[in-house]
Amino acid sequence: MSYAWGTQDEVTGNKHWGLMKCFNEDCTKAFGFFDNFRSRIDSLSNRVLPKIVKADSTPTQDLIVPIAPPGPLTSLTDLPATHVALQFLRERGHNVNRLVKYFNLSLCEYSNIPQARHRIISPILFTNKMVGWQARYVNAVGKGDCKKLFLCKNTQCQFQWHHQGDGKPKYCPNCGIAEMPSSVSKWWTGPGTKAGQLLLNYDIAKSYQYCVLMEGAADVWKLGSPTMSDVSGPGMATFGHSISSQQHKLLAQWQANGTVYLMYDDDAWETTLNLYRLMNGNFGGGVVP
Image (cartoon, rainbow, N blue to C red; front, side, top):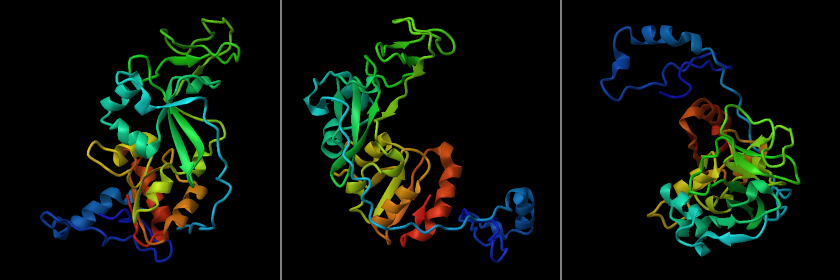
């Protein structure tokens, strides 16, 4: 069944009833099938397909603004084999050597930015320049869960701790300041990084005749550097489930005849369909949700 089945064309008023085929027992030809099926979902079938917006393919220069790393970086391949960052990645099926080769991953041991300390740094490159970075949290035993982890907002303290009680803590147990601490996220985007305007792995993925749009860096790593892979792959991360006009422009600069695959999480299926409707007319190879 096409995504457009049952949706109303704003020009013709047709609801695209013919965009369905059964490849099993051809049940769609059974007597009364369409009347019954349409009556069951007709309340959902009055949606009008959004207008397709053509992306501007004007070259983008304002993104080429180098961003400094959060501090001294150590390549993951230079860490001891037992390091918790390597343990974290291996447990998720990654080949660390290939992650370093294709995605330049490193570790930041110290930074003036507390959210970057002891984290895996994933650089965002554009025209071979680092124009941003993200930091992935890993705890002292190689796990990536940071629930109930909080950071003191006092710049003179910046203490991080695991809160054992219910709800959010009301003060820092280190400095005692009674200001609501901020929760710590798994991924932290560096200052000055225009994540909503960039596509991770764009420099590499644009050499393919197709690309795979995904939510985040770890998704691209998994697609582009599985254990048996020797290439970085066509994956691009949009840093979320939506695509900005600037990211759309980058894709338009990529090529007009390519195919775009949308591979977002299952819980973002409705968003994926909306992106499909928005983008499908812009690429000669089509868009595949």
